[in-house]
Image (spheres, rainbow, N blue to C red):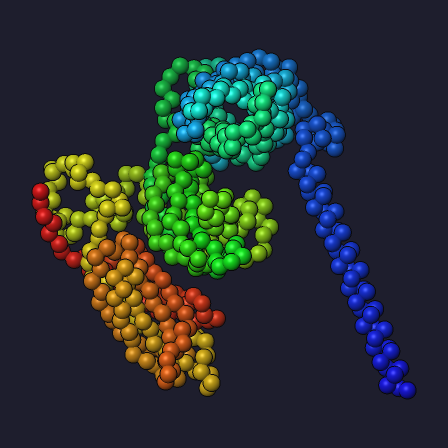
Length: 556
């Protein structure tokens, strides 16, 4: 009887727990749906919607006054700005014109009757300096412009395409510089789009359907976005002279180069149902097509090794970023984003190689993604212009000269175009001395809680291998063994160190470290420790030394 009673009580409690858990999950799901609906509603808000939520008295009086004055003068601003935009953007549209189009020009361009609304103004005292004033304007615009593009395709079809339903939120930067004694107290004003938070628009063929020609809508939209990036997006600065003078110092000018080595990625999310992803990466400092670099595709691999070098022009290291996007190549279909990452150039020390692992996220703006999408490994070297003598940049074409060749080369001998080879052609030869010092905190892989560790060193391009001795029964083995490798192309080679546990009938891999030779080329010699990839714990201590190999090249 007691058994039956206990069984009934147990079943009742179990059913009660199941019902409670189901109700909790349902309630949690409803709360998440409600939150998502609220967030989506805020994302679709227009200026008029925000005015309903925030009445005029909620805005600062001076901001309300500014918007009222802008409404009054908007017809005149519209006329002047429309002509300015047409003359400045049309050449850039032609520059980025897709190959399927023969011409791309404005037939009509007015900004409409709805003026933008200022939602905030900031004076940047830290960036203004003694000779100017820097101001940032938060702008929201749900415009009704009349913009028509006359497009002629290479197949002989002429299309008038209307750009409509523009929604924009962003931050414009105005720089009033230099300050002068004459009215209006500044010589020129430069403007640019500092942050583009949102830009949506629709394309419509007047009297037709744009989907009738496959791919043309995407091509035109991409062209428009590229033109915006290249014409007004920071660090581009458009200068309007107020008082005649020379304002060339305000113009956008390159200030240095960023050398990026895309080394590898690990633990990438698998986007394929059958097999593994085929990852490749795109990198850019400015998101313009001609300045975006693309790596090769590594097929069927979630831990790809690229070891590719790219160079970027830097205009403003204090505000610019390097962005990396990793995709899964889907062949003829659109590639699928695996994840993206970003590193600020202001965090780089000029002339010093920075070795970074960046965690991939789904969206760089929201940063609310906790899913593990993998990591990407980069080496970064920022070299400002005018510092060639003080900084050692192995990617520079002149670095291909060996020590003896540099001595033999006279200072008065000019470099000809043939001498300045592209950086992909740079070849650095020498001897790499690699000392495997020790390892610490290796994971226990034996039944006795120990490991019989040894290391295999491999030069990736030549596949030359060397092996340390086996240190038995130790999780903190010490080797202190040095190996010399003759390296024919140090800039594009890699050193791979794999730590194994020795067994009587084979070996078990513990972990590995993949290293480029960039740092040792610059520093000449260094010692450091590296965490083992693929291992629960453990790190290895390495000492590297680079000795240039003297080589005479045949003279033509």
